[in-house]
Length: 138
Image (cartoon, rainbow, N blue to C red):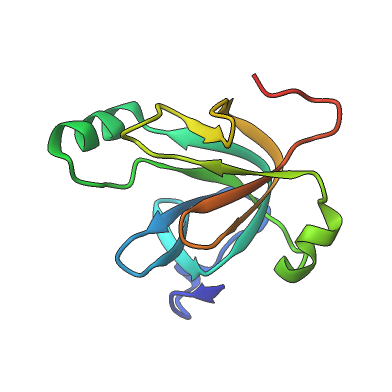
């Protein structure tokens, strides 16, 4: 993860949640906190995550047929190394969001996903989520 600048306003507070979304212009993930983009990453791990989709932003995309930032994942940055994440989370599934097809993030079966205990965000368009043991998706 690369920080935007040495300015202290852009330092990430790891005790607070961040909002991560796909940056289409830089082809990476943007990490936002306090309304400021504080870092960019090719991949990032989060825990205690919520999958968020703004209804008004999605409506604007459908009306204008033009993408905007209205969906992403909130959570705490996980300090585990991204390379070791897969070994520590064997029970995973891909999660996607397409504003033209779905109102929410969905798994590969098309079921809505709203929360996860742990998420690895990587690649260009895929989210990988760890389902908590004993918890079924709604």
